[in-house]
Length: 332
Image: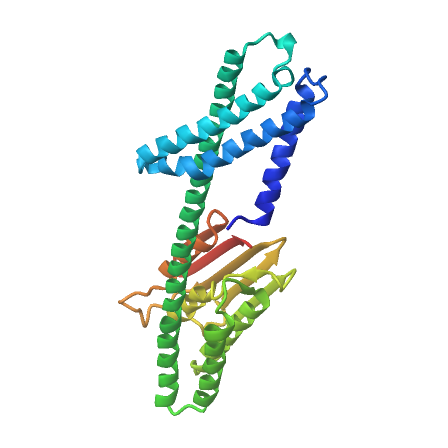
């Protein structure tokens, strides 16, 4: 179905072309010139669209070329014939005497002009097909990327849930009074993950609240005091960000870092200034409880960044002696 704005574009272009041809022609002294010019212009426009809709489709992909040639000949014959009939009716208006051309020469001119409009219709159809194919390719590519992002995001939920349930199991096994609170906190986090983050982008305020809830949940599983410095410096909490973008950093911090060293606290920075997100996490590495199977968190994160922020992010992971740091810059 042709969109209304496309029709308006076509009318505007043809109007400008008609005006250009009319005022650039110096042979419009005849009283009937305006009517003849209008009729011939309509014929040319009709020839263009007949080529676009009725002829060109048979040549694209070389399907039913014979039918296309027959239609091409028919369109060309009709266009030339109508123009020649106009010349027979009023040749002096169609071809003023000062042009000094014969009827045969006019017929040749009509053939050339009709051929030009037929070729223009063919070329325009090729261009439009190319644009549509490119748009289709981009749509398919976007659908593929969105599907991959959805898959990567779906991996986060079971990964996070597995770790959290392990922590709650430890609290329950120890008969800790913190277990009910941990279950409630996990419930709040899962509500965010399942419902509120089920969009392409979320408010930064919601994402930071999610991180704070995650930190609270992790603190509940540790018997000793957790030393963690969380610095938040945000100029606008309504910035939109990919949901659950930073959780992998925190998972690594609590999984592989020392959380109870007062002299070496975990340091977390979340900063947004002028549309640029800066996240940094630094912690002292623990030599205990190493997960030999590894995890999907950081690999997942790198791929999500590539898909969601191509050319607009910088990720740095460093190990320096007993310390581990991760730093992320993202232009929102």
